[in-house]
Length: 544
Image (cartoon, rainbow, N blue to C red; front, side, top):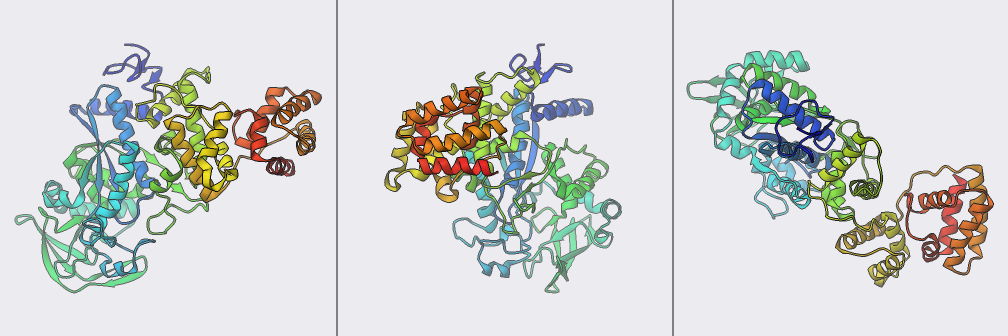
């Protein structure tokens, strides 16, 4: 059938055994290929294959929240490349109760604590509810990046009854499930109560209720609003006793069983998860297979995004890095690259990550258009595949000018305040860069970065003793230079004097000033940066 499954030679084909390069050579293609093999072995219909991700609704959505949906769509794209019909479900848990007021939200939300987020009014008044506001931010970020998904509201799923058959089976087997939860996780709570949280009809809270009896004939759950302890704090219940209809949105399943109900009801074949909910997924897999009779979806387990201090990024902790923040300084393709680059390993992210991803996007574009040669077939196809997926399989027809992000930032820092963009464009044009629409977007993003963070932090540079001597002499020469050409010629002269290959010496200087191996003619660039700043940068490297 050809060399690759789902790739250039076999796109649209559904048959290939052990191809050398699967699809576009990325982990995304490998997972999609293994998913298909598993589904074929299970004998399930391949008419449409659905992936799922959860959209957080209890706080400001962060980078990690978006990563779930993007990766699920990545699998969809790979499946479509293989010739299968596929779609991604973005399911928002808007029945979840608000456990604390997230950072950045008004304190008066405390009166709504433990109420379902879809029952809480939007404190900013621009959406129908708290959950619509928060999940709307994530949907906005996905839409801006061009990610396709089918949105599903948890509240609507319960209200329409599509989960009711699964709820019925789960509640009928609650004793077994309670023992499994205790065995798998050590949590004994569900040995005493049902894995279902009713919304108190009196006070409107959800987690203060305990469900103690299920009537399978009427399909209702009996509950009492007794109160609950969450993270060391006790919340009083109102004492109300009532019943909840499982065919309506009177309540919701506990997390340790809800995923299984969703997989069955929506026929989900793939869902990734973070290690922080690994126990819940393990229980849900068991419930899905042994109680609901549905083989659980293919999973991949990913590591979490951490902030610079090593803390987990959390909606409630206030260290949220939102997609909207990224979009102030980086193209959406650079954020997609962050998600698609790899799925395993803990990732430290900060604002310093953005320039690196923007530069890496340029590098992958060079590989894609064969401007950079990669001899190893597997590595070359993987890098090209990453570029394709970062562009949602819609790459540009030609490469961009690849203006170094840090170059734009540096120019912005020395540009006149009232004519920054005009100054930057004029200098870049002088350096030989063509300025088209894509470049103009990058210029404006880098200008934002310069305004808010200053210089781009570069990787530490290692110098040989010979390079160190040459740079010390270059500092003296630049301090007396009278023109850009004089600086340019001095670099050549010093390289030859110290028996350094001139291209290698220029490469080292580009790494020092721009954080990459190439750039504009150094003489004019350093002249525009200013003699003092150039000398200061070189002296800093010497001191390292």
